Structure formats: structure tokens, C-alpha cells
Image (cartoon, rainbow, N blue to C red; front, side):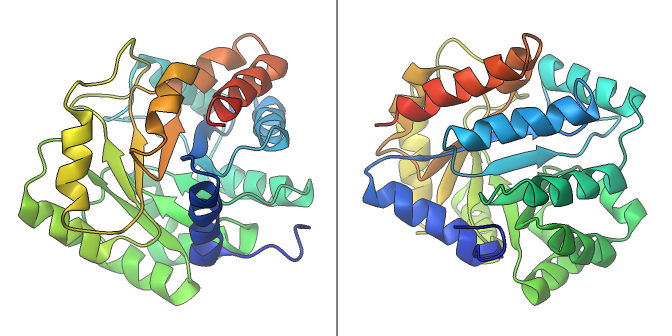
Length: 268
């Protein structure tokens, strides 16, 4: 598929989950922040991951107060900000990645503040024009998302909300009713970051959510190894790896590509 003929938005995201399901595996969507360790290298890292067959991307927009992020991602986004990365920089990056022929879905991950400052509706319009397929906003609950939700619905874009292990049935139903594309399930309470082991009650957390929705579930927080990735098969529809990808970037673009390949190949 060429960049000019690729499907877009919700349709593109639905396709990656269907393809992964057909292959009896979970979809793999790595996170990487634009501007880390510098602008050009961040694009090269994303391109390297695309080349080894990841299913989609969470494209990080840096913010000065990333409450949900662990020390690895916080340090990377701080470096990105020091490099002068802005919301416009990130939109330009998505456009450039599409020009390079990358066809996988890209969801822009940003805290709400920079997007509100940019203009909620205008950001959605510009993100679509750049080639993004949706938004992930960690500090935006459905109750406060009307402007983003209306714009995303109008533009055919995904809008992803979060559930935690502590979410009750009413919360699960609210998020499920408002989610567009998939639901981001936080594997544990706390901040992002690679862990040695995933929670023992993770399968129960997923089962509790599955009882109430058939919206695709994507797991994040703490996933870092091929062993973790294999555990995702049959458990969730997809998973996100962030801190481990950022750590690999310290060793260079090739290391990012190799880790992405190892994680992708572990899925079968």
C-alpha cells in the first residue's frame, strides 16, 4: 500500500486490529517522542520501526508537566522541549513521515494543555491534514472532551480514552461509549516505565472490561520485553511500548529498529 492509497483514521485503525486478529496476535504500537534525541533522529527512529513491521505508532508531543510519564519518557520529552519542539513541529513531523512512505496509523499523544493552547478544533483539522489518524490525550476524560470529540467525529479521527485497574463498571461504560478507535488500558496504577514483571491480576482487569465492551483494548505502561509482548497475544487487541523504545534510542536508530523487530517477531 502506498501513502497515497492508504486508508485513514478509524478505518485504518480497525484494519490493524483485524489483521492482527487474523494472525492470532496482538497489534504492536510503539511510542516515540518527536524531537528526541533531536528532530531528524526521532523521524529516523520511527521510520526504522515502520520498516520492521510494527502495526502503528503513538507519536509523542512533548509537554513540560507530563504527569503520567515515568522518568525515561519525562527526560526524553524535556530534551525535546529544549530542542525547541512544538506542536507545529510534531505536525510537520507526521507530514514528513508520510512523505517518506510510512503507511501505518499514527496517533498523536499529547497532554491537553498544548492542544488547547493551539486550538482544539484546529489541532484536529491540522493533524488530519498532516496524516495523523487520531489522538491520545492522557489527561482528558470523556466528561471534558466535547470539543475534541466533536472535531474527531467530524474528521473521522480516533479519540482514545483511558481505563485503569481501579475503574468501576460505570467508568468502563462511560469510556466505552465515548471511545473512538480503541481504549487505552493502563496495566497498573502509577506512571509509565519499563517493569520486570506485569501485574498478576492483569488478566482479571482485562476480563472485567471485556464484560462491558467489545471496543479494542490496547495495553500500556510497563511493557518492555519480548516475553511481555508474547503475553499480549490472546489477552488484548494491542499494546504500546514507550520507555523501552526511548531507552534504546540512546544507543542509536539501529538499536530502536532491533528492539522493535524483536518485539514484533516475538508475537509470531
